Length: 92
Image (cartoon, rainbow, N blue to C red):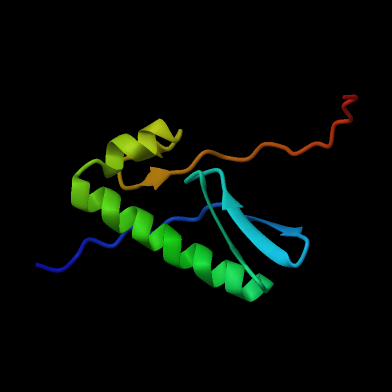
């Protein structure tokens, strides 16, 4: 039986810390890094794929997605929607 394919669009944030590029997605609460932007992007695609495969194997993909704020529709799952980003100043 062929594998069920899951397609989705998520927001991935890319940051630069020193010489490393960080890829982070709040939709999966996953992050990885690379020495180049392209490497961080590729590694994120790999880790997201592993995340989905492993949660499917355990049989708890729906519970994990729901716990991360995803909403199930009739035909698919929708990730949480980023509604804004702001910079705040703090005094320590």
